Image (tube, rainbow, N blue to C red; front, side, top):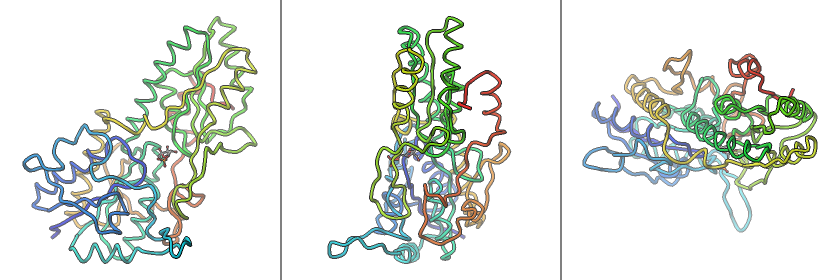
Length: 380
Ligand code: F6P
């Protein structure tokens, strides 16, 4: 019988974090289980900083369903299996996971819920190998967590990008311009592809299909020939030209095994090239963190609630070392071992590295077929 559980939110924030937290807390309360939240992801677990989460009497987890961000914070720099510390002015990496294990055991948490993307779930798997009862919930606007058809936060990001495209449409049409929208997604093109379809874009460049800029030029010229003097282009931040490389805005030094590469800048490059090659004016808009902030869509509220409730249900059934997923459109769960894929080494590797087991856009996915059917140019 579980009596006391803890939640942590880790990685870049998304709309829906709070909806998951609320659903876990509510399901826990309905089953007589006490709930706590570690502050700022794995950093809070390491420092043993946590607070009580309850929906009673307007307490912390009440009224949070539509609220963006995370009431218990989140961290993008915490690989506790290879943690960056400074000793005598020198950077020293340490495996501090046993401190976390001790914290969980000492305060009697029967289960830890890890809300996060591939890096977070990699650490979750590593904690489960150390004997901790862990249940993961797949988060990220990028929609690239392995083994699930959708992550919470993704739908809201697509909606924000779609609204941006609607707005770029009217200004582009008015001034006869090429309007480029750079969206997030890291090494996966889900946001770009789905928002391109939802927002009626003419061209979508995604990391999975290295592009030939001349194909985009042909598309714009064929529109021009039909009297359409504007075009809408969605560019994923991880898009790259054939034979070229990804555009990196900067790199951080948050330590080995965490996401240190900040992508960005490809939208501006594409806009400049298209302007030169078509003779039409082009403008780039980089959507950035708009995609992660603010209230979740109805879809994300429901998905997050389903994921949170399922996670707590699994805990009550004693099914640990798993991730809640959507499989064939239904709520389900898989082993965290399947989620990490071939990235079996304990500790050293976290998210956003060559070893990460992420889910990219697959060439026979419906979104790719639909985009091609209606004539969206994918740069190939
Ligand atoms: O993984 C989510 C994400 O928003 C990516 O789409 C983006 O590349 C990255 O995080 C930005 O990370 P940060 O918050 O560290 O700037």
